[in-house]
Every structure is written in C-alpha cells, then in structure tokens.
Image (cartoon, rainbow, N blue to C red; front, top):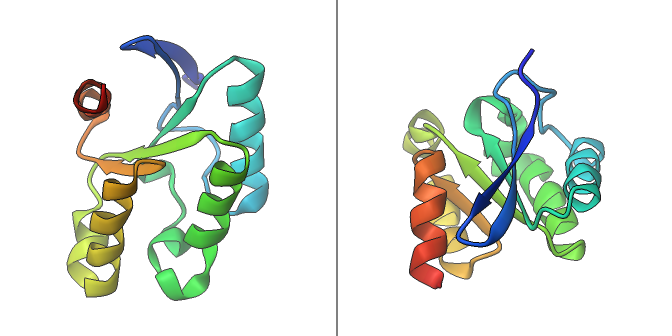
Length: 124
C-alpha cells in the first residue's frame, strides 16, 4: 500500500493521497483527511477520483455537500484529480456543479495531479 505524502507546489503544502487509501465517502473520512493535512501543515488535500465514493457524485445524496462543508469549515482546500467524465456525462447538474465549484477556489476538480500545480500558478 502506497501512503499519502506531502508535496510542495508553488510554496503550498499539499497532502497527496494515494489511490489505494480509504475512500472519501463521508464526513468521517473527510475529517480524517483534514486532520492528517492539518497535522502535517498541508493547506490542500489532493484526492484521486478513484478514491472518492460514488455517492459523492450523486448530488442528491448530500455526500458532496457534507464533505465540502467540512473542508470549508476547517479552511483546507480539496482537490479531486483524475477522470470524473463518466459521472459528469451522466449528470448535467454535476457538470454544472463541477464548473461552478472550480470557479470558487476552495474545491477543485482537475484532470490530473499536474493540473493542481498549474491551477496554483494561475491564482498566484
């Protein structure tokens, strides 16, 4: 099992989560990641899409909102990276949600981990 590690991107500490770790599937999992990030002085948690529970992508379930609210409350950014195209293709509401969320800056959905470095460079 690969462990989560800390990576510095543009002067920002990022907790880069391994693909095979526990799923981000609810508030408890979010708090575990936030605690790990804060304990390691990371300002961003980067989670591979395959580690995000499928209910997160069903907006009606409320899981995404609950998870995102925890990150906002603790002032830790969340970046979900990887292919979420099947989920976005299946839901216009999710597509709009991802677009809107990416504009706000606290939670990002990115194509891959390298896109996080680009995003941080763009905001400056």
